[in-house]
Image (cartoon, rainbow, N blue to C red; front, side):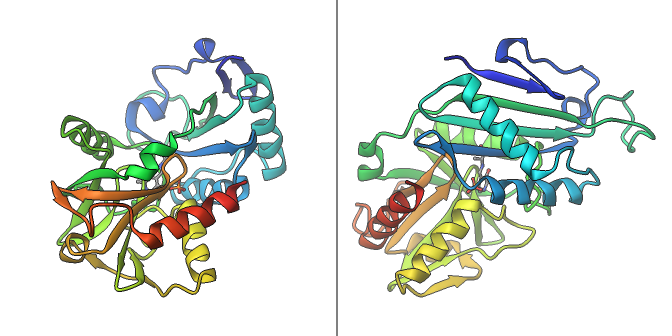
Length: 279
Ligand code: PDD
């Protein structure tokens, strides 16, 4: 079992996977990506991730290098070669190698990278206890729906969270909660599940969609609308969701207790439904 790399059509041990220093992904962050994980060894929601990759690519003027059925085979092949019980597949598409000039090169071939690493499932105790978060100004650009490799604000936010000894940084733009640095944020108040609507200010999370579907199936009222920082602070329950985060209760924000200070009942219900859905 070992981590696997894939560069422009060739699989190799991850430590041998390299790209040029003139790659526009490296020079400008001129690229897009996806993160897919497995459950019981099977990659989860590959189609949804590929659909978003295609949307992100199109938004920056790149085309998908492979049709979806080929992507499925490549992901499966990478996972097979790596041989981990659970894997995390990272796919990155950049505008390729060209002399450094901001405008698109006349000719370039996208660089296609995939890595497959071992995924360590989050201990149940963490979900049972819930996590803490801080809020930070959302200083990101106006197209957060594009899953761009330009992640500097997210990197800085997550570092702030780490230094604060908490799990996640929740972005707030003009008094409105957008999302976390690696997750979407959902708020429960008076039995209503509310979260930022899809649009340019958030990443349209694959997990978010699934969780909202599950909530609707549970006949919980769901509101996709602007959620204010005030509402976040006075929520009965808050939870995060994302590919690596799954459904994760937040029990403290900026040092203040959320609800009872314990993961709430609706979060617990959705977390259970989520577990059933992924296996
Ligand atoms: N990020 N919002 C942001 C800013 C994210 O980076 C992510 C996931 C999500 C959740 O999306 P999804 O449910 O489709 O994973 C929301 C990945 C995992 C990452 O960058 O590592």
